[in-house]
Image 1 (cartoon, helix red, strand yellow):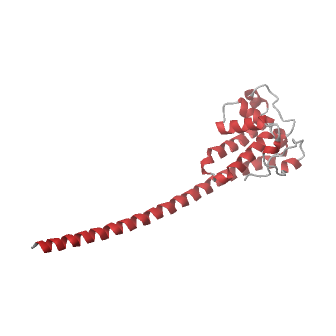
Image 2 (spheres, one colour):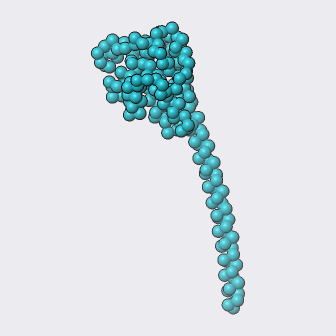
Image 3 (spheres, helix red, strand yellow):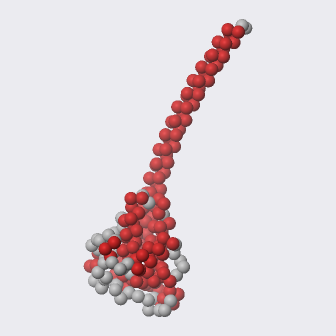
Length: 194
């Protein structure tokens, strides 16, 4: 074998290596595109699952109030307040109303737990929806502010609603609650979840 043959073989090996490297790069790009598509599909599936969870919880709350319309007034009516001195005493004194309010608060807390999977453009509508309900229920606000059961996001929003002097900062919507027959505050909660 002479030097020209070795040089020719080296050129062939280099060409094959370059060709394989090019194929590897193309396959790498194809794999990256596939991974990006899979990630987007997973994000959409996660968002759908999050919304399914929120809707199921919201429907169970709606069912609770449909089956017991007076309960809504007991939580959101202008005269809705504790009959006991503390959260713990209220739990025993009015368990029906107390645990219905906890269910509502657990719904809100679940929304905040699922917050990272909610699209950013829906953050403010959800915050307004929760804030409106907190604004309209001294009963619910008192449970949040006098217990240690809820996360920082819900507590902060509750404080914001508690200290609000004007309802003008939040979204204004007509609400079925306003027409439910109980004495409501002038500032109704939003009609439905975002």
